[in-house]
Image 1 (tube, rainbow, N blue to C red):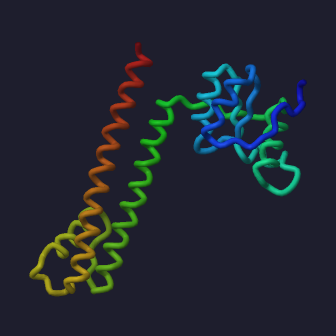
Image 2: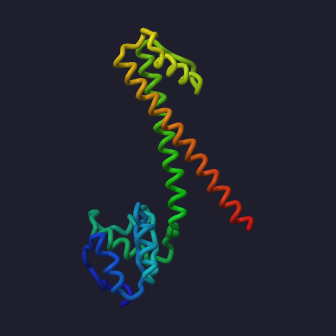
Image 3: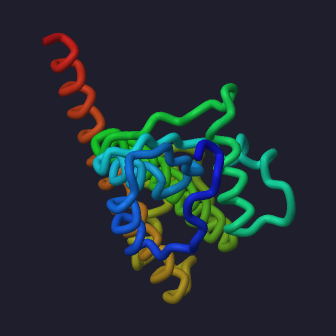
Length: 193
């Protein structure tokens, strides 16, 4: 029955494994998304061949308005195309490493946002400092100095909270840097062996 619809039904997440356990090994096309690597590993463990496709590559096969049914039909057609490019399924370790890098990147963006906020809020009171790490530290020293009467107490409390947030972000980024270095060292040792 190559190319024929065998099953056409909507599934909830908790029903996916049970359905595929009942099916003989087959080709399964999945649009690459947040949970696709998890499902790919689960279905491969049941003996199925899974091919992940970038959504942009599936989109040309959608024939009418976008919904789950037309997406599924497009995926079925796209997965059989000889020129289709597929995404390799990531291992749990690969996904963990990517998460580490992405979380670090998120914290760096948040750190930049907090620094810019501290600078902007203090500038509203005419308090500025040079750009760079030392400049932010100078600003936070002013915030911590209760004798400095340029800041109202409410503003000082807000800025102190931002300073605490900044210190926590810096500590987390440093911890992630250590983990990245440790993982790189392990990979190097594995490749050398």
